[in-house]
Structures are given as C-alpha cells and as structure tokens.
Figure (tube, rainbow, N blue to C red):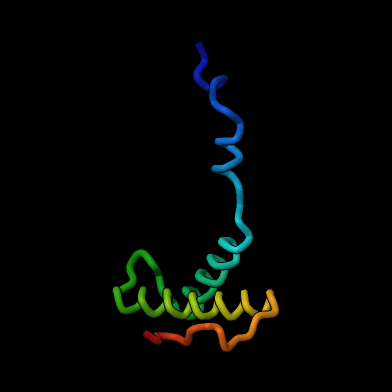
Length: 80
C-alpha cells in the first residue's frame, strides 16, 4: 500500500507556505549581513549579536511604518 496516499495534502501546504512577515525579516537580515560584510556561518558571537539586534530594530521600524504605528514604540538598539 502506498503511504503517500494516506498523507493529507495539508502537510505539503503547511510545509510550503510562505509568511510575508518572515520573508521581510529575512530580506532585511540578508541585506544587513551583506551591508556589514558578515558571513553568518563564520561570524563571531559579537558579530552575530550585532546583526541580530540591527535586524530586529530595522524590521520593527519597517513593520511599524507599514502598519502606521508610532516609531516610538520600537525598542531602541541594545536597550535592556
């Protein structure tokens, strides 16, 4: 008996779906890695922390602007 016939098609749909917000986050992430010449696989922990934080702030500011939210709501870089 073929096991693929028992699988619901929703598994494939779930696996292949794309979230627009995730796509935007990673687009910003890769742009910033390129901008600062950071290769993630060989980056130091300090470089990774920097890219993660700059990506977070850039993404949150971008999202706030797209949704018409105040930029003052975005937590600044490296703030505790």
